[in-house]
Image (cartoon, rainbow, N blue to C red; front, side, top):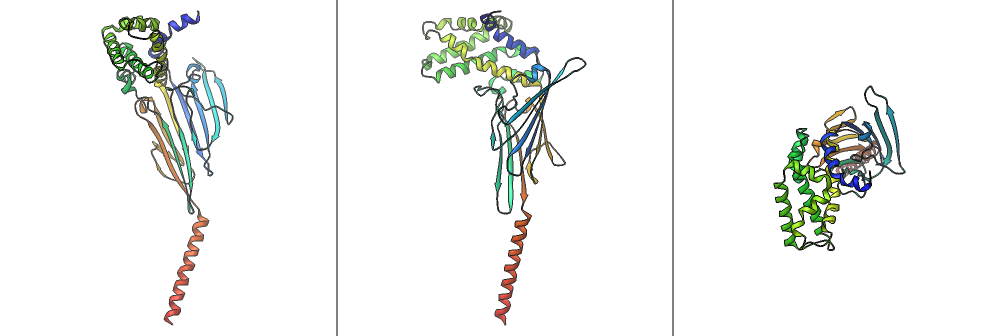
Length: 327
């Protein structure tokens, strides 16, 4: 199959993968904050090869990270296990791809603030909300209901991709068009998608470029040459966004944190001994951010004892001076 033929079926394969090929994968994340403010992290992802090696939830990579992969034979399918460990400091930013605007983002920040009597630690890890209900609510409802029928959301998803892509083109002076023409174009795309049956739409999207060109035909005399190609290319990252969100549907996360000293506040689901524990999946950040937070404090007994001793000496000195004045 040639590259051009592969590109021809790109969007259809995306929809097919959204409908049929979601399976379960579990990722366990261990974070242990060290007294000096650095933190060690361990990631363990288990699942089939498709899930473990896709880009919906990446393990961090780089010189300080060590990754090992092993295959465990199973009765039906082999289980793949990817383990990554390393040490970080301050803010850790990692996404599926550094150049991706739509990948899952989950920045982690650990802070250490030292005072004379205490040292305070805070941890905050944000799983950025996918904003599905703002972009394509019907798709969000289908994820909640485990409904694999794309006819309920395909037109809505494509409309979002087109509107987002046109907005991107409008923000670039080299590709922007007259604002009135842009509004007419958006209205035309909305009306076109509303008229096309879902079955016909699915068939038309075998070649998305041809579909977009046909949809823009009434504007051929108004739009710059090649605008349809630009629009098609600009929708690529929003196709990726839809695919990544779908791939995350059955991903489950177990998050474990160990903090120095005594925990002063946290939104953990449970606490077992010294370990803070969270358990969540896509539904927790399908729209809004899912935030993991913890704070702890370490007291300095030696400094507190010195302070108490100094205070006691001052009190005794004051009492002694008062006594001497009376006499």
